[in-house]
Image (cartoon, rainbow, N blue to C red; front, side, top):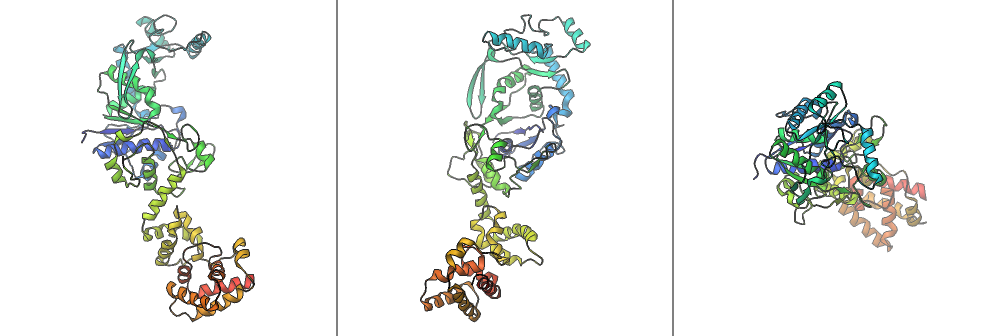
Length: 509
């Protein structure tokens, strides 16, 4: 067992949480719980221009709904807080000053216009402009490596705009290790001198991320593969500060169900499935995005599906409760390549979880739907439980129950046209009238008894079973669907069954 495991999920509050981000949170959670560690939520809100008011609340609600709540974070067990980067601003200036003192960072006063001009000059001769070792001290660029200390001080005091850049070491071979991807070798000469701090007092992602991970004692940085190109800089920053480097693990992308590339909201909109855990309303445009919760998915089924998008247990097992996922999870079994999202597989997981629930649990869930569909008083819980037992095998979601079972609660007002044309013959009304008399004579109105008496009567008439059974189903259900017909007839009762037969005879004969 590893000791002192501390991991973090560090989203930016710029909108709803994509399921790719949620999977990152899930893998961090599973890893922490497997090793008796701590799962931290940190809100990376340094980019105030993209900040969205309700996004942090949305992130927290999503983690809670999924059953993977954080151990430390905003407003909860604040041991090494604050947990919002915007509330840690003073810290970052202290640490960037340390890098300046150590000559591992420098002030750069180049304007964006000047940098654009350098880029264009390079492009004109077929080169790419990189701000790093080969040009930072040649006098073409304005920075504290070229200027004297006094000139630098005067510029800062005058209020000239500046950024602080990391001084990437020259001619160094970096040997990096990723827990998923193995060893990676990088030539430091190919790296640029990334901006760490801006004159508005805000750090960039790179500085804030490293400082926070160090101060929060993060042991493992488990994040999406889009951050893999930043790993060399982050390792160099740890080295510059002379801090212990955490272990890194970069997770594969979740890919579109069709075509190439990363799964996006556009894919969900086009194919009609959610890419967010909870429904989200854009307060500016009023646009509503689908959520898995509101679409009728069970949180444990959703989490089970998400866990297998990029990780496999090394066995054929597909269904895992959260405790089993925690026990089985291992970073070494996370894939290097992207995982294709499948809507059908996602529905399959929900169906499996639905079938695993008891009839009583499903009846309780169905009750919330029936309250909006039926007048009071509602049928008994036992009745609803029996209905659920007959129709649940055909359902993917609890919301499917109504269309699968409405005829248990209300008589059909219309009859399927195709079925009427096919099943209703000249003598059908006469046969059903005779069958009504058979029903009246049945004392034990159980499913078995109704079936036995009906079949005996059909045999005595020497007619095909379909001649009676199909129109009878049409009378009771309104369509050619539903479970065992005599179970339905038993459930709705003799009086209601006879009434439905009389109504269809009157309408169609």
